[in-house]
Image 1 (cartoon, helix red, strand yellow):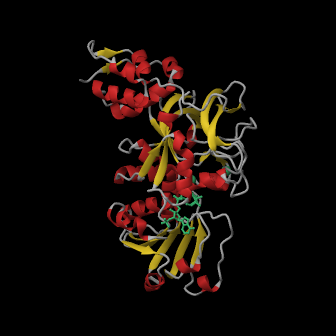
Image 2: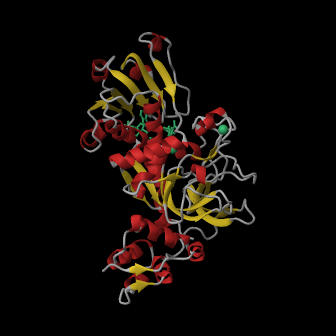
Image 3: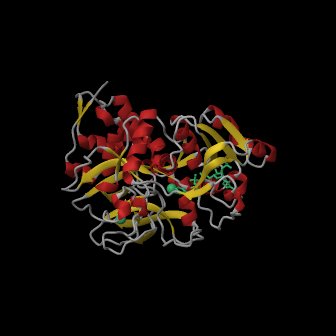
Length: 442
Ligand code: NAP
Ligand code: ZN
Ligand code: ZN
């Protein structure tokens, strides 16, 4: 039975943004909710008892009834959790943090700034786990500021907008990726490459906040975030919010170099090295661009679904010297997504004349590159960092058009350390996504 639900006022939304976000995500695109859908939603994310008593007899439900049904008990583990308050007038947030480089990820409380006139307040519903989170949790890049709340692949619902905000409305789906601000004035910003802002850009977590507060930015392993509207993305309506979350980093990181280096011409031969979060997005996006895609992986374990489910054309075990030799000089480009040390020449020899390998993975130790490997064949070794905001929106729209989302394993907060450990061991197909709405409840 379709049901009419009272439209909440902004005050009601502010009182319980989580319920509003869960409800809005289930009814986005103007869907009329069915009573049975509401009950299912409530028993999944809210109060099963209140869910049972949801009744559509009157044909209309008051907003407060929805709130009661979607209200969940506060997540366990937060009593006595470490707490940091960087904004005296801020809103309380719950999240997950590492307290030092040896620490597991643990429940953590902090404050977010009050939304300013240009800000969007987003209730986070899902957040992807990127290998960069792991590098930084463990201080492998030697720049982590603890406590660190990682997460830069988040999707959710807009629950408040500042007075000057024009691009977003309350109730819309929204995404936030790796950056939350930049100077807007330097050559990189003017060229829509905010990730290379000379100021530099403000990364979503583990960076100095750009609001003058002295706070350190905190990411999407948390229940909400406040971001300047220029750094918030629209998530296409047809994409599942869990599957879309990893597009905000993994998706743009592979999309941007394919476009920038013109490795996106249909029929080109692309190598994807490492079939993890980034790698599997490279296969999907590369195939949608019309490329012939060969995956290079450390074992045969991902072969079957790389070919059948992800749509790769060829699969090579990189340790197999004969297979590697056979492909010498055949590829136009390679996206290298390996997160650990590995020999570059083995892959560069696969490139054609003038071919290019783009380094996306950030292993903790320097790579070794004998000059002859690039001199013969006039080959290039490049790097690429995520993508600009306009390009990220372009990528999301491209994925919407081609119905591309990440293959995800959705996990709750109590599984986070196990998930990170499995990611370290390359035991994930192909991205863990934290179920924020189900497991980070105030
Ligand atoms: P991921 O899901 O853990 O995937 C990495 C893949 O690399 C693994 O699935 C595995 O693929 C392969 N691999 C891991 N250890 C290896 C080893 N010792 N030798 C050979 N191959 C190995 O990681 P991700 O999230 O895709 O991120 C990959 C890298 O990109 C990380 O270093 C991350 O920090 C970096 N990153 C960079 C950017 C950027 O803007 N440049 C953005 C996001 C992430 P197989 O199982 O197929 O062998
Ligand atoms: Zn990332
Ligand atoms: Zn700039």
